[in-house]
Image (cartoon, rainbow, N blue to C red; front, side):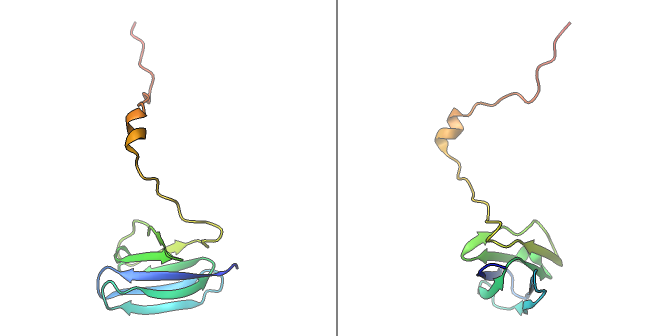
Length: 115
């Protein structure tokens, strides 16, 4: 199961519900309405977990301090998060002005021959 992870959940809108369940054990680790907007709650989990909410788009999730992008879901939905020990978050690549200037655009299709 790996080491414990500290999950932080913040509601972007007051009254957003949150149910956090560990994947391996099925144990519910948190099940409440997040009343205070912007106040982060912390839950310790082992392995992967899922978050179910009445407004999933209103939640932000961090795992061990690293922000995770929630899937583009809306309304009452469930988002599943893998064990961060086996699947680390994708590292965003910042755009570089030098690489943008030197990058050449390649045609996606060869030009058609004329007869």
